[in-house]
Amino acid sequence: MPGTCVIGLQWGDEAKGKIVDLLAGRHDIVVRYQGGANAGHTVVTQGETYKLSLIPSGIFRREVQCVVAGGVVLNPATLIEEINGLSARGVPVAENLIISDRAHVIFPWHFEEDRLLNELCTSGEAIGTTMRGIGPCYRDKVGRSFAIRLGDMYRDNFQNRIEQIVRAKSQILAGLGGSAMPLDADEIFETYREYAQRLKPHVADTTAYLLDAVDADRSILFEGAQGALLDVDHGTFPFVTSSNSSGVGVASGSGVAGRFVTKVIGILKAYATRVGGGPFPTEQDNDVGQHIRDRGNEYGTVTKRPRRCGWFDAVAARYTARLSGVDVLAIMLLDVPSLLPELQICTAYEIDGQRTTDFPSHVDDLRRAVPVYEIMPGWREEITHIRRIEDLPTGAKDYLDRISELVGRPIEVVSVGPDREQTMFAPS
Ligand code: IMP
Image (tube, rainbow, N blue to C red):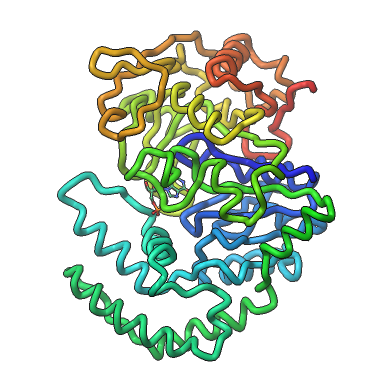
């Protein structure tokens, strides 16, 4: 079975949606398997821009089966809004979308917890979550006692479960202090019962579906959300998201064993960005950062927050490429650093006077890392119209070659704009 996986290798927002959309036509099935509505995948097709948070980016191809697998945390309101929004714009969402009955559901108390915990953390550096209830929902999944999965919403005891959990959560929220919104069990039950009815036609055992698909040798594309540096186990903890957003998350999130993934595509921006808190060694809080932010429109898809911008960090990218088992790279937004007189690539860190190319496991060490830069000449022309890699200016080609060399993987795709046509493939 040809299983392909698309993984962001930085701190998210690497333009994965565009690559998934391009590859979707070559696969039978596209799967979202972790994260939730903290993701914002932008797809531009036939001049129309779509922003997807939960629905796989394969939804624009009629022949593709889209799957939201059990590792995703679901906000039903967002999902329904997304389904309705797509349908209203003529993108059919019917049996081509199935959603796992194992996916954990986000409830109003999760939003409250996200907000109140953020307020409690203001003394230190806040994680700066997207406030979508993602962390609290994953916490309940691991804690088990207060968790509700999509499949639970169709059981006779659903109302009882809500009542029990509302009692416990009201106490917990009161304990967090602040101004917790009161939780009304009846109202929550009614609202979520309606959501459950609306989503019912899509709900399925997606693990069984995918295992059958593997047996039938159908091709599957796994669409990672966020980026590997935000992985809860291997990223810049605690400034991470709550799921395994690197390549290691495919198996647990989807139920399909890693050995069936035959190709991993690592997605990198030609520079680096980060949203929220946490160390970012190559950050450029200056004119260069602003140049990147303006030209790359680096504002959060979900939260609209301005993204922190900086130079390409090859130490981090090499680490996440290895962590995710990456075979080839896609370099996105290469048009953004155009016009800069020179570019810098971080090739090593100096931590307490010691030079290293290893990515530190502790965030405090990363915070002290001073980047060692290699300076490369820029290219002083726009490249958005170029359609073949060999036609790029010498500066851009040299820059790509150096990234590939430092990360240790070949570049297969280069993107110079949001449209499908603004994509170049390395000759195979
Ligand atoms: P959470 O996932 O909302 O809990 O946020 C945890 C951290 O991950 C914060 O720094 C967020 O800004 C970041 N984050 C979550 N989702 C994304 C994403 O899709 N792109 C970029 N950063 C993200």
